[in-house]
Image (cartoon, protein in one colour):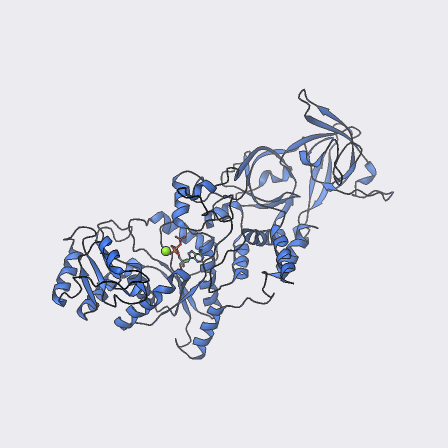
Amino acid sequence: MSSSTRDEEAAAATRPGESAERPSNFIRDIILEDLKTNKYKGRVHTRFPPEPNGYLHIGHAKSIHINFGLATEFGGKTNLRFDDTNPEKEEQEYVDSIIADARWLGANWEDRMFYASDYFDQLYEWAVQLVKAGKAYVDDLDAEQVRQYRGSLTEPGKESPYRNRSIEENLDLFERMRAGEFPDGSRTLRAKIDMASPNLNMRDPVMYRILHATHHRTGDQWCIYPMYDFAHGQSDSIEQITHSICTLEFEDHRPLYTWFIEQLGIFPSQQIEFDRLNLTYTLLSKRRLLQLVQEGRVRGWDDPRMPTISGIRRRGYTPEAIRNFCAAVGVSKTNGITELAMLEHFVREDLNKRALRAMAVLRPLKVVIDNYPEGQVEELEVVNNPEDASAGTRKVPFSRVLYIEQDDFRELPPKKFFRLSPAQEVRLRGGYFIRGTEVVKNHSGEIVEVHCTYDPATRSGNAPDGRKVKATIHWVSARHAIDAEVRLYENLFLKEDPSDVPEGQDFTVNLNPNSLAVITEAKLEPSLASAKQGDRYQFERLGYFCVDPDSRPGALVFNRTVPLRDTWAKIEKREQEKAQ
Ligand code: ATP
Ligand code: MG
């Protein structure tokens, strides 16, 4: 079966257990209901709120797809907002990469790019407002004590001895916290809610902490920083966000999100949670991805083995493929795991339509056609993309000495091996039939050369006498071939769940030592000499490849984006059979 047929089959079936129609989407349903009741006067305004503490990954692509996709669908808007309340981990480099990556994915926030740090003054005023209302207090317990007093899921918390300070004292202490009078961690500002609440987030959550750290935007202006819970909802409210869509781990924070908004009497943004994207053989956690970068396990955030947007871009994935994948994954209210093969399937499906075909031999074996005139060169015409007639055709030079893939020849062909062998005929892509005659070996018995004859009557790719061949193989003319480096990637992790590790070890034990294989002497057809950084091709019979940024004229470097074999289509078929 050709790869395109497989792709079509799988695409038509979408996901196991799902119909081919648009997947159900409970967030869309909420928005539709809000539009019906005119809750936000017909407005839909979402935001994508990355923390600039790492590069975006494929999980963020899902969030971008949901936030921007839903707003677009309803004629609404989406803001990009940097959630930058943690100066110790945030950097301008991350801000810049996030902007570039989100744009590349197709996100358009027009002029609405904001930072939570834009709101530090307003947040401080609101904190003072809560202190004045008796809803917040300065606590002198340290972090460890706060944890102890909080209790657990089965035990209620204990009230802090500082909980009932007077409003005046709280105002004075909070102002002095801001003025820098106290060391890091010595005091916090806490909301006064309920230490017996069954929801731990409501047990007097910390609103502000003391941290003498330089912020990438506000410098040393602040030495107290708001916690996520006291920054996020308020930032949403300032921007008049209608639907604040986040991942499920924030579900238990929602009562607090709503509590702050109600106590402050500000614009009522509403929080809605969906499932995080998890992928097999992949880790989607900025902290762990940072560890891989810092420990030199990969070449950087944009290493093509990384699940980061910059990594998969460099590898050759397209924004369209990622969007199609996100659309097919849909949203749910429970966390699950998605097959990495499904993502790869959408990459293949998209590249199949747009990538020009080319011939490249990764592990060359020399073939000499004994009955072809020495010094003669012919130009064979081949199709650039069978999926797209407008891509036209090109000429590839053919001559007496060729390279074919070592794998395409067997001296002693096993059963069902239909490619070249002594006495077995195959078609060369774009033209002639050749038949093996003898092999030449080196001193250690390895085949270094295969001799063949060709049938001049088969130039059209068919034999006038009607005889058939069972295989068509790719090749390049040795005289005309250009050399290239080709980087082949396998999964970065060996285990489906990379965080499944023996006690006392960390996830790096699951790294795949063979995730990168570098081929330095691949032979490419000459038309590829002009390939530019980012250009994508299907190397016939091998997979999709793109030109790496390391590439230079005369020293081309290609990345394998994805091989042709579509395991997702197989998985899906199995799932469907199980379901029947
Ligand atoms: P990580 O755990 O990788 O550090 P995060 O949630 O801390 O991720 P943020 O920068 O806070 O990263 O995320 C920005 C937005 O992207 C948030 O709304 C978050 O919920 C969403 N997001 C992050 N990871 C995923 C994921 N795996 N799937 C879907 N959405 C995600
Ligand atoms: Mg986060």
